[in-house]
Length: 594
Ligand SMILES: [Fe+2]
Image 1 (cartoon, helix red, strand yellow):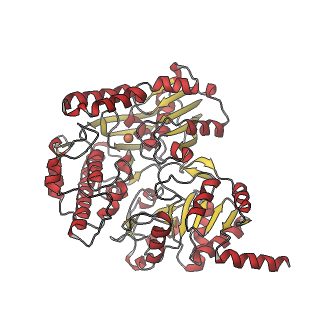
Image 2: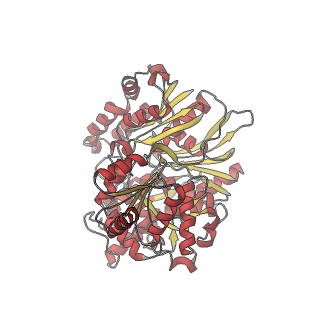
Image 3: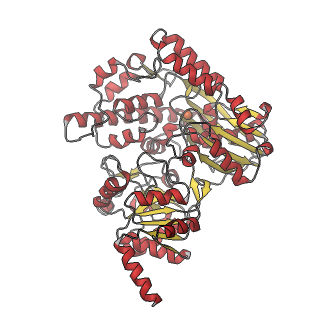
């Protein structure tokens, strides 16, 4: 049975194809269209999935959209009417978006793909999040918590899931919290207040939080009140997002926290103003964590289960995830590589397969690599056309060479196999570098990533060496599989891992099992043999404002436009013809030929 899952029209649209109960392909539209956060109908992603599986649209048994457009429309209309006349400006925009795209999804899918309307199905937004979290995790029974800004009405849900011995699957929702009461919206409101982009830059707030102290927690708690039933409610006097699309915080919010940050000015942490912004970030981060931990604790007591599956955009908050693991009572916490809305494409397709059609339970491979493959020979051709130095090497020789490059302080663009699904580069489209010094961090920031100095880089470490360098609690290795947790770097290693150690001594570490990315694992070991420390800095392979690279041509173009020294695609290694290394290597080659 072929089931296509689609998420679209909010931010970061995606498609995923499930064949006979197992995903065969999943990709975000932005990786193909090259427009960051592309929210349009994911036609390129759909084509890519169908092509990869070698099937035509008429061979699809079902196409599942990740939320119920009419319910979402109902929410937008209800909120607009409640807020009238304050909402009259926002109302036409909301109507246009809803009527133009969201409500008529069935018609759009039917006309774009030529599939009959009866084959088009819908899941609820938080059902899709729950399925993406539970059905991709290697557990048979787990509690499930999902939290985001908003879906149709739900903003947070708790429940459980079971893959039963008779092959059937059950996913239940016990309770949900509804819009406008939303942890995601609370965090996004601070994201906007701090001058960052909503729905995109929330991780910057988390990074900034490490520089602040939670001195404003009492003020943040005025915004969010715990209710006797264990839920929470926002005090809407401090917010505007439910009334207008123009501003998410009210003037009372600004009275409470002070003037907003000008997004065009960098945050100077040496000034009182800069420190206030960091304290705001630290305070909302603390309240978010506390609230999630309390809700999860109740869920743990209620279910008595050992495993917790987390879904929704809030599950991208690695600091909160680590606290959930440490304090909620669950022994293991699973976060999928794409817990946000893009991941709902896979969630919707799996939900439909297991629950709607009642197909038998299947294990889903435990990795994030569901996208198109990189072609090393295409990279060699591109580089040679421009007279850059390209060689195709066997695996062992390539690993040795790249390990030497990294030891020499070179920055490496590393592409192999299938593209990651989700926001994080987990070893197939990564920029790799030596993790030891702040100079390397600054070089990457200034010359390649062009991003705020306060944002940390992440490390990757082989699973066997992980606890030697990082202070991982039980269950920490699992949470770090897809870089979903932030953990302390062991104090004795911090001075030798400066480029990946955040100001508070932590790192968003990826713990790598050999089977997940064998070549990267081999590279880490080879690097460890040379330096004594098998840890590399691993950041996503893209420039600021661009999506992560997909094909060889995008990796190559990025390589040309920044100061990456060495580019790897499959078995091909490329260096720039202008670099000193290239000249030495060309001379060496000439000698050998002579
Ligand atoms: Fe969502």
